[in-house]
Image 1 (cartoon, helix red, strand yellow):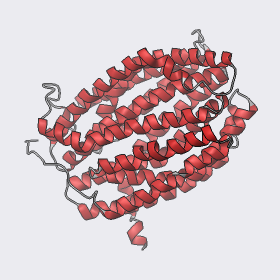
Image 2: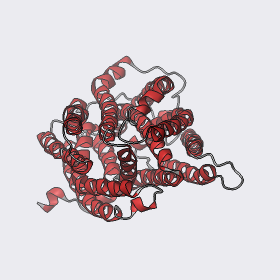
Image 3: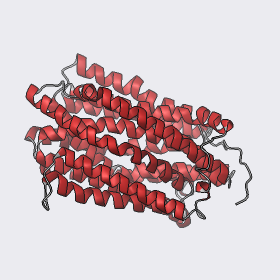
Image 4: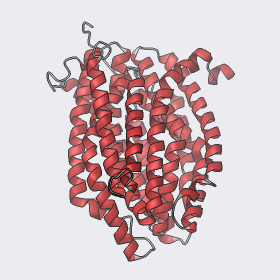
Length: 465
């Protein structure tokens, strides 16, 4: 039984070599985002609320890009596992074209509808003056952040492809460099140190934009200077042509994943909008809770990314039994890690909200929401690991049902009905909504157990190295 669910030292060494750079990059990125959030929280509640709402919109954009690179990335990992560098190059081209199109459309939507979208979150109980102030801060922040959307997109196309080849160190180094730049510039531009003007929320956005251009420079420069290790980049820009057969394959297998990530992100934004109908305090409390959740959940979320890469490579190499064995052991380890991290998160929740310059009621709400999330963390870890397992074999329609359909058909209707038709306080309401993820665990277990995801979905094309 132990051998079935636990690997040997060599197995975990292989996993950690792949996972730790991803974990470090995402962890530092989220940690600096947390410090960014705390710095803005020191300025005032309205500033924190406006930035939190604007970041909800950017979150939807980020997940759209993530879905696009992930949908194509299923093929990238399997092409690399099968030794087909030409197929990987075409996959990279597809990512670049599709993601840039998403970015341009998103920028247009933010310009045209940004004020209306932010206003949706500011209709809860609270003063009209506070809502107007939060709207102004949110729009100012969103304006500057739009400048950094394109470099963010290009970095995701490069970094995701590098990870699919097992090269996780360079994206980590670039990401760490970017967040350190972001942190230093936040300190200077938000509060006006070293002779710089105190720009507040605009300073936070400008710092982020500069850091994204820096990350873009590092990733592109290293990838092209080390083309012997990154064969997919050789001739990548000689043509932007992508074979129709591959486009059709990605559309069939990858499009559900792209749609899923977009709908899931939009669903989570709408779910938070449902909560915000109770009061403006809820927006601030959820902002604090979600900011620190991103830091603590990076362990099992990064593990999920590693699951998708490793299983994709094994399936691409034709090792079906090895993929099933790895999936079982990695899911087990991910859940056990999340139990320990969840316990730490619950303890930290008692102290974290005290560092914000806000009201005592918002601090109490934030602590309660964080402790509820801590209890649910092992459940989320199992669901996340199951999601990436199914995705690795191209079962994207199942992941679509499992993920975004669940949010839209179960989570949002339940939360909406509780908000609109009951007087249930926000804390038990939030707990009920989060506990619904138990259903996802059951679905994930059934889908993974069936083994229909164990499938090689690529046809390799021979090419001289």
